Every structure is written in C-alpha cells, then in structure tokens.
Amino acid sequence: MGGADDETLVALVHGNARYRGGFGFIIVVCATGKDAAQMLAVLRARLDNDRDTELANAAREQGAITRLRLDKLADTTAGSA
Image 1 (tube, rainbow, N blue to C red):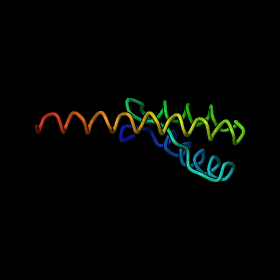
Image 2 (tube, one colour):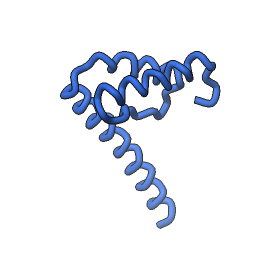
Image 3 (cartoon, one colour):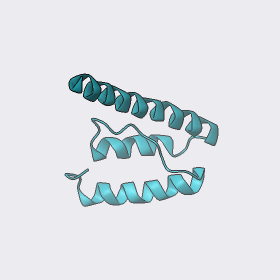
C-alpha cells in the first residue's frame, strides 16, 4: 500500500466506508501478495454482493489468512526446534 497513488488510496477509503455501511463489517481480504490496485479491484468486485455472499467471502478469506499464519508459525517453531 505504501507505493499506492493518492487516487487509489482515496478510492479505497471511500470503498471501505461504503462496504462497511452496506454490510455492517469491514471487508476481509487475504492481502498477501496484493498491491493497492489489486485490493481496490477486489473491493469493487465485492461491493454489490448480497450479505450472505459476503459472509461466505469473508469466511473463505479469513481461512486463507489463518492458513498463512499457521504456516508461518509452523516454520518458526520448526526453526527453533
């Protein structure tokens, strides 16, 4: 996100506010490997979904985040054994 242009950052702020206002929760996205433009594309693609679809998306994305964290933990633990 550090290299994102101002237009993309502003669009993310507005899109996130619209998302939270529409669904009542923040967008959950596994951001690993995604730049700001890709994150904005994901956000825009999901804005018009219904709540049930977004709950399923959030659960799937949270699963991906959790798997990454567990893999990192396993790597760290294996390295210290």
